[in-house]
Length: 370
Image (cartoon, rainbow, N blue to C red; front, top):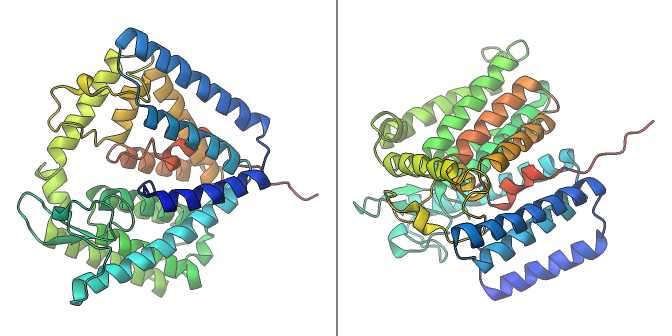
């Protein structure tokens, strides 16, 4: 989850990884060539950054990046896209169930959970945290086990996209499928993430429009209840906390910092057009004049500043190709999913996390029966 730093946990994860690699030694030519190509790009990128721009190398960042690339090449050669979608939605569903229970305990009882902290305590990776550190308001948001609620929201949005568009329309309101949609949706609301709410609306409206012949909300009681619950939940969240009104309409809250990070990031990318400032370098000096030092809250803008415009275009091409694959070659659904990914990655620093880098590789192809 990108926040496990203590040594015992790292050793356990390393042993699991070694066992997995021993059992799954091979890397296919396709992902092998991609891995070699990416490593070659990293080498050239670092060479130019260290000699032309003289941005100092960050060894830890480079090591983590290489580990993630090798891990993805191995994992994605042993898991099909169908298996990945099922595993991903199942894991996110489990995370959402646990986080909702913790969220309820914290907010509706006097029980104090040992791993839960306030944002003011500086503990930035808990099952919930409270903001705003400037006003000391007691607005509780659900961040799951991730670094902040906005990042949690992005992971939930991707799971909702998989769940909605990879499940037959006739089955989406039955049994576990309906339960998953409801739990993922409710958890998304508890994050109080503006990006999450916008992406959720895009997904749900697109789903209804693309399947209008099969999705009759008025005649399907389960779908009607889901839509009604989401409308009430969105209305309550907006009227109580003013998420969209504050951040999008009034341009308050984190809007100023994010917009500044966006403009600054793409400006740096254009200035360092070919290779960026270096994918594993300390390029803080290039961000001089940013509204909030070392913020870089726009993941895509920061990524483009690091790697340059040509590689950004290649990355976006890969994201669209994977979106087609995830949506089972349905072009309209793929465009919607691609749009959601763009919105999400342009507001949260997800691109350099493992799930963001996974768009660069190809999932294992299932062997078709005769």
